[in-house]
Every structure is written in C-alpha cells, then in structure tokens.
Length: 76
Image (cartoon, rainbow, N blue to C red; front, side, top):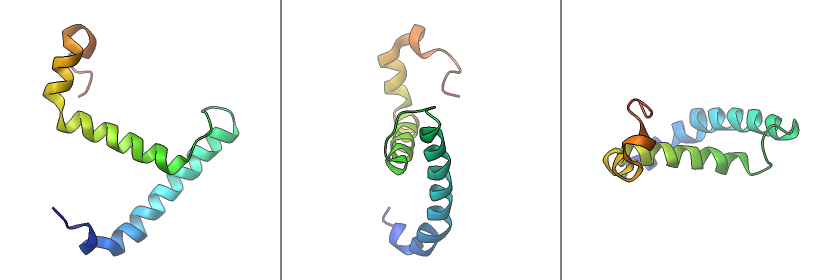
C-alpha cells in the first residue's frame, strides 16, 4: 500500500504532465469566467477525492441519500 515512492518517475513525469495540462484547461475556464477562480490543482485533487469517496463508500452514500436522492444508475 506504500508503492507510490516506487513509481515516483511516472508520478513526476507522465502524471504531472497530464495534471498540468488539465490545470491549464481549468485556468482557461477561470479566465473566461466559466468557473470561479481557485487553485486548479487542488480542484483536481478535490474531484479525485470525491470520486474515490463514492467508490469506497458506495453503500454508505446510497444509505444516506436514500432511494429518492441517489437514484439507480446515478453513480454508474
């Protein structure tokens, strides 16, 4: 579970390049007034964290939201 240090070259290379490219797109949206200004990298991390939360805690999310708010297929 502590493998990230072992793949540091990929993280600092391919992953960083990809995230920097996505951050540039988000910055463009901010400049265009399409979304509020914020740190684009932290926005990406927040999206990752939210996505992971839904993946890890699917049962809890569905229980808390209930059948009328979660909806079948909503998170598929």
